[in-house]
Image 1 (spheres, one colour):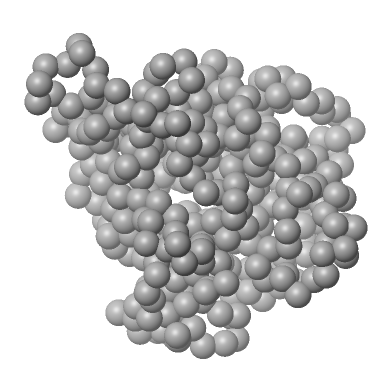
Image 2 (cartoon, helix red, strand yellow):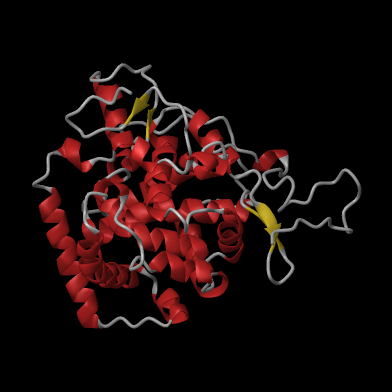
Length: 348
């Protein structure tokens, strides 16, 4: 049961940093006015590629290893009741923070989290907009680009990693939240990441649930598949994705989770990644992109009017009728354009 407790140490009118007004910091820490990233950025090139779906278990589990983030998901989210739908529709606004060329999408994502707060099992309080929690979630998105490229391509060099870091600060500023947790340099970020992996992240029931896809039904776009056929192959898919995710983890995370990884595993993962990269080069560029990223490309090229309504998730990814008005479900109930296949029109 989630309960929010007052902090007796605060004076009346003073807001607790991590619970009631988590994004409020000193004026120097506020997000600056920011120019959105554009098609010339490294983030546009590396983010929004379908290879990112191979990172799904890594991203979700790494996020939920933060104790406060895990508590919020466990207490508030219906993620575990509709995991495919939640994942597939949340990609749209999260990607839109980069691709929509407006801060409005970032503010929308931020506001989805305003009411996610409560107390943890140890009595500590949490809020989804606690700057340290919110920034941790952001790191799994931007740094996920680096980890994905290192294994699955497209190839990435050290200079591009540094560029992605610099752009990640702009990306984060698009949310309109405190910039206090953001490291100043790429070297500082590397120290931050290592510290989080070694000293902060913890195993949690939410982590283990994210990592287990063996009991899930088929995703919405595979709803045609008979359940016996799905059950026949999902166990092998689970093993493969767990193996990929184990290899993507940093060594301290593997140790914390009790997972083994050998030199032979590492060589096999690198070879598998090269095969994925080679296969993706056979796919037309347009088809490699998530619909929100592809739509942004189309706006820039003139294929879609620059002022066309934002492209939203397909109807099949929507939550139940009872939940559709709840903003924490990343749910645009009404949309003028919903995604379709790359060669089909996206009008509703």
